[in-house]
Length: 504
Image (cartoon, rainbow, N blue to C red; front, side, top):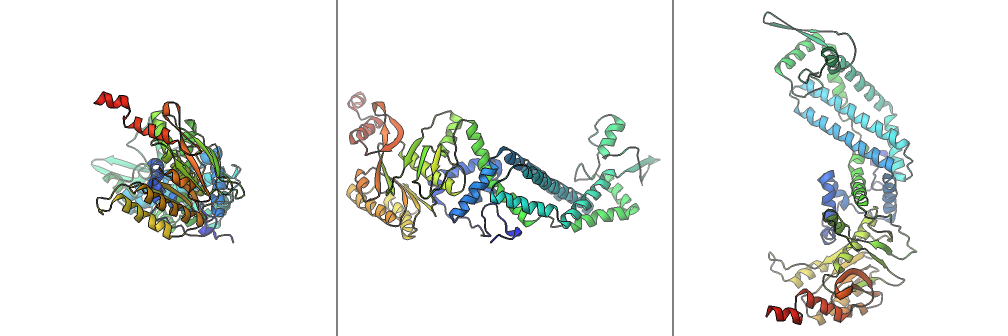
């Protein structure tokens, strides 16, 4: 059933009210908070909440993905960016209105605000009509917008505002100073146009301190204020029309349009980030979500890491992966500092961005719909609670396992590192079996090679070492080489014979 126009959302095809997640541990685990904070610098902190509205169905994901495809079109993107700039003008006029000290000034600035608002939406509607929209969401928004702009109520509002503004711009009065006496009279001058244009024409230069007091500044001088009070007495009908037009236009914003203004920032913020990164050479792609196709990606990289590398000029390493038929969990082992955690984060970012209907940092990808994303990364001991590291990990793991959420994507990084190997292996096997029995998929990063054979559905990945056992940050199928891993640790902590001899 099609939602009523006042319930329309650019984030979901129904009338479902969005409830942001109260606690999003995977934001920090996957470094998504760094990415979102980066976007908030330009788009404001309010946009951050829209990254906590997770779609509840594959239909919602498809709805968003198609909308994002439209917004990625150059003409659509440019028109929406221009629209946000026009709305910034509206916001500035609203602030100026609040500065006004007398009611008449507030009325005029309110009328200007409405005029700018109408112009912004009229320009957007005209641009979108010729932009070749194809998504259900953007086409529905354009239909609603056109219906509003063509309605009798809107046309009356626009005509009333335009008429009043034209009269204000044509307003003239003459100040006469004679023998310590100032008189103010309505006046007419040759020519038409705005007060400022007349001054420029008559005097031949711009005079900043002689501008239409209704237009230039919300704060009036005592002289300007006195002049307007006199004119109001001499032209009561005209000034009454100004107040009436302002009063009758209160609450001019349509809720459906106000909601669109807020929600469209979700798409524009990521699209702008993506364009900046693509200009720097990073690759993005639109993922597919074909259930009959295995989950896979080529050229996948860590988005947060790439953002940090943009400023430093460092190169990042991308990886390919695929879950073959019957495979549910990757168990990733390998040397320290070999890129295991980075790969796990990139996998989580891929699932999250795909779930949000956005493009992903990869050459290509197929990601099925997951109802939720769960992560558990190694934590430090809590000084406040007095719990040890193992207890902290178990406290956080308990609700994940108690939820019994089916079909989620789970990322576990370096769990039970402070427990004895025998105990860590038993607990690790139980965790893997629990999530696999629930039909979940995911990755388990660990130093325990034994977990690569924990149960059916588990496949082993390893962080590959390059020449001289230097980490290559490449992740491949297969079990880690114990000797290479040991040598990596020995080199890292300078425990080789030569290093020890030198230090001793």
